[in-house]
Length: 398
Image (cartoon, rainbow, N blue to C red; front, side, top):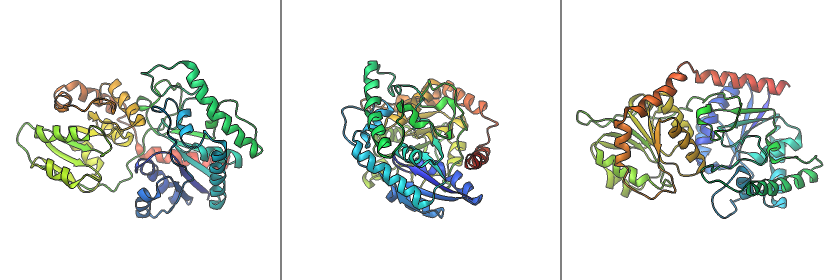
C-alpha cells in the first residue's frame, strides 16, 4: 500500500480536515498510510488524535498585508509567499523535504498550492481535494473572485504575472521548465471537486467532474430541543465570533421565541448570560448534523460549505452570515437558487428579525431547498468515498 500526504496550507478551523476525514479513514482501512500536514496543528491536533491520526505543521508564512480584499486566486497567492521568490523557494523546499520524509507517493492537496508546486518538482502525482474555491478555473488570467465588482482586465493580468514570475524563478532554481500560465499550476493527475455544481464558488467554471459531498466526519452530540408553545419553529444556529452579524442573529433568535439550538464555539460567558432564555439553548459541543438537518426548519450559519450542503440535501433553507470571501461565494449560490438569504460581512449591522421571519414564512425558500434535495435524492455520500478510494488506487497505479 502507499504513503499518502494530505496537505493543507491556507485556511482556518476544522472545515478542511473535517471534510477530508471520512476519506482518510477509508484510505487507512484500505491499508494506505495517511500523513497530515496542516496549517493549524494547535486547532486540529486534538480532533486528529481522536481519530488516531497524527500531524505535522505545514510550511507556511504569515499573511502579507495587501490593499483591499483578494481580487483573484493570484492575489491570494501573493499574500502567502508568492510575492517574494526567495520566500517561495524556502516554502517549496520545506514542502519537498516533508514529502521525502513521509515517503509520499501521492499528495492530496487541500488549498495547498505550494505543496502542488513541490510535488511537481519531485515528480509526485497530485489529487486536488477541493470544494471549488481552492481550484480556480483554467482561465488566463485567473478570474475575478468578486464578479459583482468589475475590474479592468489588466488588473487580473498583472496579478497573474506577479505570482507566475516568482513561481518560474523557483522552478528554474530547481531545474524545471517554467509554467506558461499561472493556471497551469493546477494541471495535476486528478482534480477532485468534492461538491455540487450549484454550490461551486466559480459559477462560470464550465465542464468539470463533481463528485458530490462527503458524509460528515461524525462526532456531534444529540441534543434536546427547548420546549416552546404551539406554532413555533425549530432553528439551528452555528455561529462564530468573527461573524460581523453574529450578535444581531442572537438578538433576533432571542426575540422571536422559536425553539433554538445554538453551537457557538468560544462564545463569551457574557453573551451566554445575556441571551439565555427558556426557548434558546447553547450547545457545549458540535451538534449531530444529521439530527439538526432532520429536525430544524431553518439553519442560521456562517456559510461553511459542509453545513450548508447538509441542510440543502435535507431540503431546509438557510440564513447565511459569511465571515470571508470563500463563504460569501457559497452563500451567493444558495441565494441564486432561492434557497436562503445572505447578509454580507461588508453590510452594516442591522435587525435580522424580518429576514428570519421571511425565511420561515415564505414557503418558496423551503420549496427551492427541497428542489435541490429532490434532485440529489438518490445521491449516496458513502459512494463518493468508495469512488474516490478507487480513483486514488488508479492514480497510484498510473
